[in-house]
Length: 187
Length: 187
Image (tube, rainbow over all chains, first blue to last red; front, side):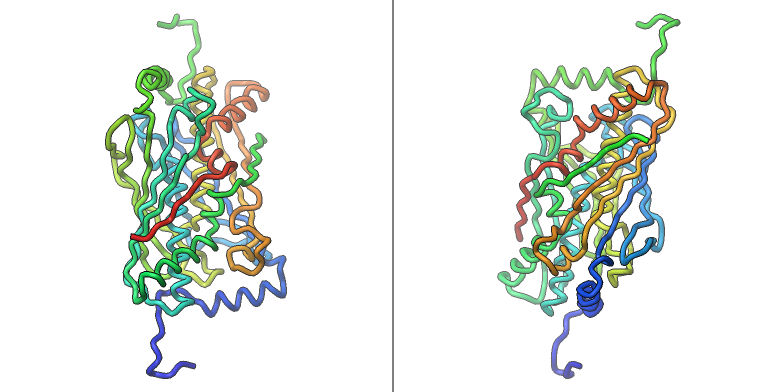
């Protein structure tokens, strides 16, 4: 219960529910096992379409409210048809969305009202890697930069602390900065 | 020039152009520097929208034929509004699209006709990591599995070799399995 005089930020993040989830998962850690999924179908050339809807968590199969579909392709400079974003741009989008959701959540926890948040996320690579021209050049990004511009009811120092905490708890930041085991099989 | 009797696969991948690119980049390696970009805007709660269009490569600014927009959000089980795929599902989509484009390209190089390619990509995590409940649990995926089902004019062995070569040259597979430096700053 808050007094009428007390300011409460509302960034649209339900912190009470998140804190409740944390307590519930402390009692039932097996419910914290999540499994996310995308199903991809090759269309033509380098173009494919992925669908995302079902996932597993809280001990049972779950479904997003709607099915999400994403086209990926290579661009015309690679002699492709450019029917979608490149797969690496999907990864940058995931990083942007993850860190931004984190900024909103942490702001809510810290009672900071956000007015606007934008992020420019860039990843550079030398495509001689994916073309197999030089095995010393990696296929993926050699460097990724995220630049936030945030207008909020907080000092610059507090805004920087928000962003730092978002990084610390971000799934996609962790996925990019640390190695993950990936197994590829053929049915 | 091919004889009428010679079978040539056509998966829609322009291999001649790719081989030409490889030759051109051998002469002018600075053209191989690419920079990919996503621009993200916070909408409300954990929902944000990213746009992808401009990128840099072949020594100049480039643009996709159209702008691609992606909504990311957290699902209702996290007390969010589920206005988009989760950021981690975007990463799985990127991995699926990257490996599938690779399969099509390598098949083309090897003169293998693909009839259908599907991939189910799954990533598991313990969400006590992102909730900050246990610092020994990572935020990102603890394991990622990709299962291909491929119908092609080739033996099982050749299909498995296709998939292995796609992995070897995949940008997103590399991004997941190896660490990348990510710098986050506030303007």
